[in-house]
Image 1 (cartoon, rainbow, N blue to C red):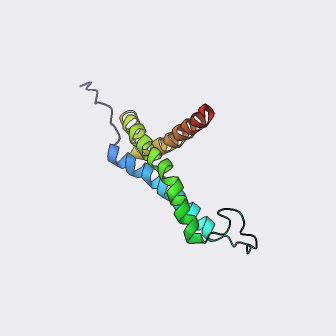
Image 2 (image 1 turned 45 degrees about the horizontal axis):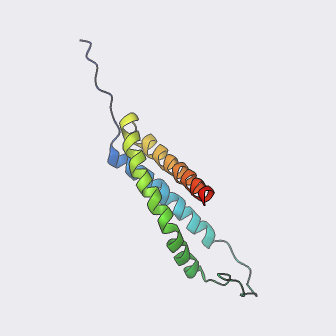
Image 3 (image 1 turned 180 degrees about the vertical axis):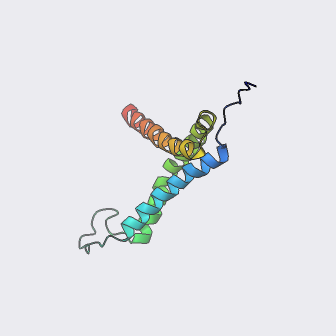
Length: 116
């Protein structure tokens, strides 16, 4: 008669795929946006990293961005695990976990820089 169903939970896997999709979208948008911007020819190459080719810029970005991306992925796993239990939609849970992870890593970065 008055049977109350247990609340439906979002799938952890689908929520994680949505969060990773947001990261892939942002990375792709940055790469496409930066590759389409024409650059003025550089005449002074005396400063470090001032005359890099686009391939060298991407390599440097990957080397320097890998620790941040790793931190984001670890944080996303934890936040997605929490949100998938509370929210019934995997799209909303994945989007909020991506946003929450970016905010958490930014706060950790600010605290880290403030402590130095």
